Length: 302
Image (cartoon, rainbow, N blue to C red; front, side, top):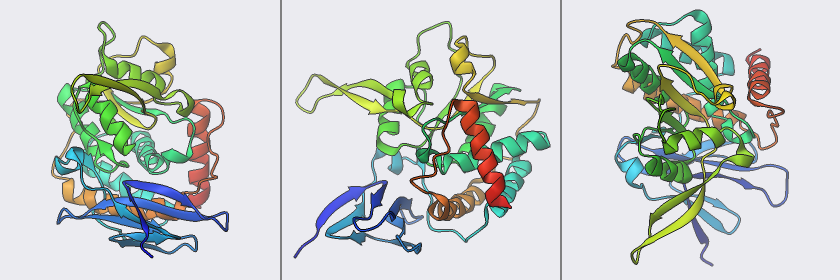
């Protein structure tokens, strides 16, 4: 009997006969082959061309334009195992090698990076904002940090493209040059609703196959890495940002891609080992959720 096939970029598949389930994640190898990383209900982790669960065969979705153009960064494999403390240390050391900040700044960013790899169990997520310094430094540091975040989406300034990418891949959006309060910019609408799961649906207009246009509601919930020189006029939006102010000449070295790939692969394994559907870390607002996450992280580090 042939199995029903389901293509996916990654998903949670609850077990029919237990409280556990399968966690599936998309991997795009250096040979440009799509694979699925998985964690089984008994805790086994691995990578395979497909995963059979019950009567369904789950296979990786064929790479779309965002994947083929490298506008989204996926892991290329399953990295070595590391404790949460080791993962924080390695991400922190990576950051220190490539940009200038304070010990508190490195700690903030390293924790945020780990949050992006678990964000989809939250109902509320903060944004990470880089401010100060030159525009080139802000954008360079954002790209650096994005290279080790969960599914970093670097798709430019067009709001329609960003909506499409978020709807397809549910990753960490890199949103640069957000000093746009004096003019309408659709990206502001994404930021205004994208931190709260219950509010994070926006209207997206696209061309219909037969001509004309059609609209659909897309989900833009998730972490965002933002750069800007100033602040947001909207107090609510301003309150959703964890802000790190950069000094002059903040970016030290732009040759980090291979190192970032190795870290992404380690973070993939860390996600597979720590993600739980019932983590319930979101209570209250953005600051309360960030506090609960950092408290949880301190507990698992110990």
